Length: 163
Length: 102
Image (cartoon, rainbow over all chains, first blue to last red; front, side):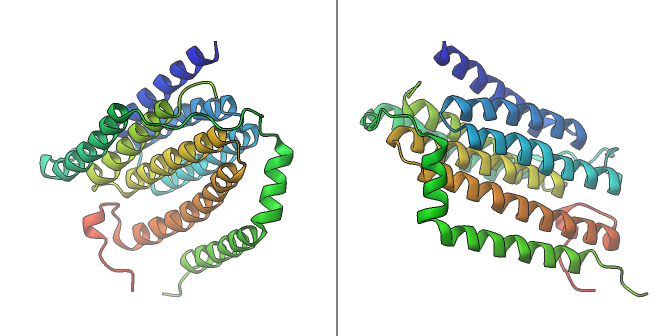
């Protein structure tokens, strides 16, 4: 049951992402991307990470994508003119790098020397919290400083300039 | 572990490739480039969570949370820069955005 659910969600994620990156209209692309993130959040839940699944829905699909939507509507980018389609010369490096990544994946599949799952016990939220605030306490401080720097930078960039 | 780790790595690899294609192809729209970066970071998060589930350690989930916090900072700063550049240059084409100074 969980396997079937995982493969369905993986298909939904990949198809929604493909639709998002081929969509010309940015607002539609963001709607597709929110669909993809919801499916990915359920995948996280299946992988015994309920907290990450919740943060994915709240922060990614909720805050970040709505921020994108605000900017698109503020700048009035909704109606794109023709001539903004990517040209073939832009596609070549993308195809090259994607070919390299897919070749690496195929080699991984052929190799078949992946390790067996080590621990069978489920990770609880308590383990996560102990690890987060115990061993990685310094990282929390760094992240908080980074958010502060982001706030300062955004305030600097968004201030009104005197003409 | 509901599915083998290999399948999760393949899913993350496909998502990362799609994000890479999005960044490299949409050079005419900086918003779509940022969306591609989001997709790539999501693929990295999926790989961290899958490893955390595979080895039974919470470290992967901690770093997925770090990626979420980093992404929110990065997106807010990048979108502020987009608004600033659009106010001055009236375009979102990356090839036209060459300089930051007034």
